[in-house]
Length: 320
Image (cartoon, rainbow, N blue to C red; front, top):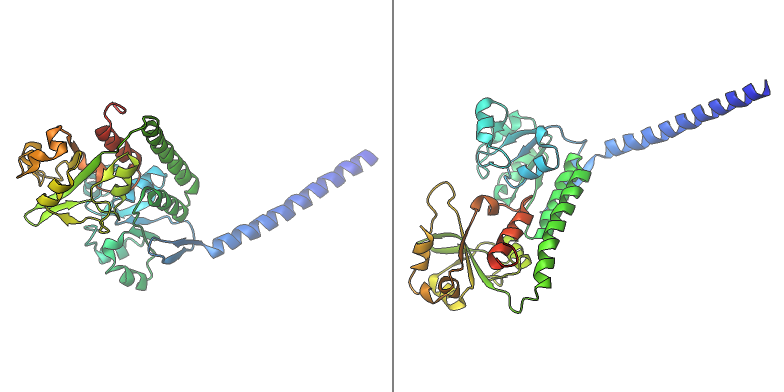
């Protein structure tokens, strides 16, 4: 009889303790839900989401692959016509599986409102309409990484905003490990002098668009073991001319593939034949490389591939 009383008492104590724990946990969890998720974006603006978002709009093509990478791509209800990674979304639009909100610099506010998003990710290219969206009660988070570390922080920010922090952390750790491997190989090679790199983004009669200090590509070039020719120019994408490039004499020239048509520079042979360029080291030593514009057109989840690709151009013996 005494044994039964002891067992009953133990069971009652366990039930009471468990109930108390559940009440405390529930209260704490309710408090977290009540407080919501507060995000400070790249412009310093604080946005509080009441709960983990179920309906996401991305008008930043660099954000979309991150959303899919961290496992919340199924929550996207709207994208721009320029989104092409990690899938061909134009086919999704045609099939009615996704809604286009227009261009990434000219999104339709009417369409955005009709989709009733819980959160919108964008870049500063939409600065003019962001205040209007917020005035209408839309939750807008702006991203704009300027370095590899900024890209890591952007991935984590998106993970926090979408309830996928663990996946975001895992992605950052993977990218960091891959990039550190490249850095370690270059360091072990004891390179006496890093090559000077001219990276051309676009060319026209107005001049040659290249990479400045405030572009994430400047950091990618540096991390890949190169020295950006225009690292001292504060603009993100400055315009330069033939004479400056000839004078600075780069060891490596990087050209983008076509972006939906013929490359702005024509061909590699056309570039080599530019007036005075025969004296440039990169041209003399045949170190003119064409790199995939699809890989290099956005700062995001493919940053490790960007570093690896440029490192292979700079040091083909180390990265065959």
